[in-house]
View 1 (tube, rainbow, N blue to C red):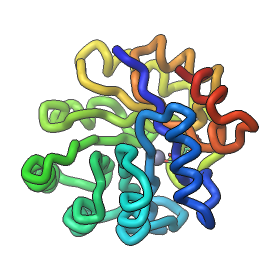
View 2: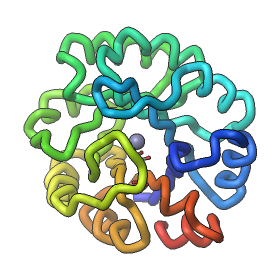
View 3: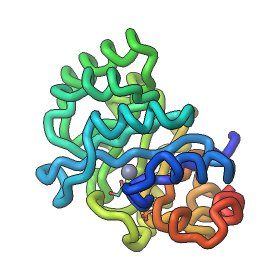
Length: 211
Ligand code: DX5
Ligand code: ZN
């Protein structure tokens, strides 16, 4: 599978988002990861649909929107209208019924659906929904902040998931040149990285090293 790299905008300079998007696009990013946090599901607050709308206007990069929020179904329309290309919700925040409803909306609007699971959530939790989703986002840190250390247990989770799932497996949290090797070997093909990419002197070199 082709390895895709998604810089997480959470680690960018928000006073010049358009330039940051341009920078990672030029450096070879395949898509851009947008972390949405509500201060309830995670202990941090970031951005909402308004900012996604302006990111959409200033870049043609694929927008991969990671919803770390409670009641995601309430905000799906707003994030689709803002121009999201991919939307990930957490298994910890939706029922099977809600996820089916979300899928219906996203299918109609041609937006891809991802399911994510926290480090402490067992793989078994998402097994019943694997047929519904276009990709899985495995969290390799406790969501909420950029710059945390990679949790090694994610590697086994990815390996077990790869044995039963042949679509995109994304991994998010603590990805750098070393941890990238581990998760790729286990079967992940979409690597999200924030601090490693935006903190690098040479962004292209950082992205190439992940690939
Ligand atoms: C964590 C976010 C991640 C974060 C990754 O809650 O979901 O996308 O931005 O940042 P790094 O790569 O610095 O761990
Ligand atoms: Zn994320």
